[in-house]
Image (tube, rainbow, N blue to C red):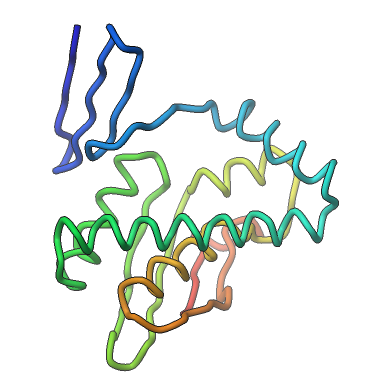
Length: 170
């Protein structure tokens, strides 16, 4: 039995016979943020240590970002089209409310704001007070892939530290 739904241009489908869920025609899995994802993050930190776990998450974020940029370069092609679609893609996938405030491929610069991300929710459940590294690392990977140059970030604002959103500058 199969089910599908298009939410704001993002396709979700379930194949209950084969036990698969797809988002944008790629297999996905759903996790509870406040429990399962928190446990995953807690375990990484427990085994690797605080500083090392931040590096692991940042690097994982970056690598997944390059995968996202490759996927959308193949399907949409143009940087403007991709950056126009990604905020809706991320919100429908539960990654939080994302706003691309500004970007310049030629100037190798971008400012992105994220509110109520899954990483913020996990870090809040963990009792953290320092901005996470996965999402800014992820966006650095996305922009590296789209701009064709290595990109990195600085955190201008942090929802975890009391701001209304997290803002990353690349």
